[in-house]
Amino acid sequence: MPGSPAAKLMILDRDGVINEESDAFIKSVAEWHPIPGCIEAIARLSQAGWRVFIASNQSGVGRGLLDFDALFAIHDRIQRACAELGGRIDGIAFAPEHPDHASVMRKPAPGMLQDLARRLQVQLDGVPFVGDSASDIEAARAAGATPILVRTGKGARTEIEHGAVGVAIYDDLAQYVATLLAA
Image 1 (cartoon, rainbow, N blue to C red):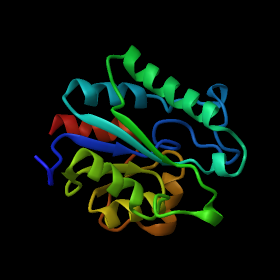
Image 2: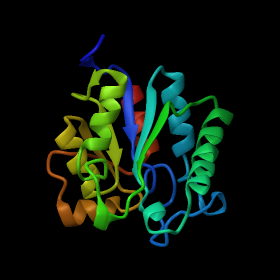
Image 3: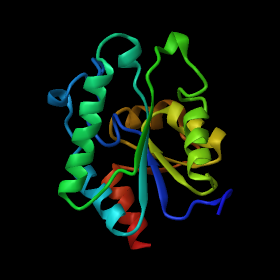
């Protein structure tokens, strides 16, 4: 139903939530390393009827560190890893621009999440957006989603430096999903 709340919909940041973070950017499939337990967690969500989407800033493209072919190869690897365990990523949104030339799609702006909601014809109220940075929390709040912070990637630093007041915090995606599915 257009404009209805999204039941069993989850949005994930990519770097630092699904795969290891790198200050040098993830530029190839060879540099992509899943965080232990995270692909299994996505598979568990899928098997429990959840639709899983990724919303990720990918400024490495705008910085000239990788091209779209390399980015799509990484995303294909993520999707295949999930499929191998019986899971699925239902869609991937990304903002490829350099931070100095950011559009409303680049987090912390809510454009990427709002665009996803518009495409799915849902409200984001109550939809968890799992991230590891202050920009993820800001984007979730601005879009009306529920921010969830994980301590992987930049998450532990985000927790200390930004406090993440009113945000549920978990060690990693696997712990959050286990808690969610046990409820």
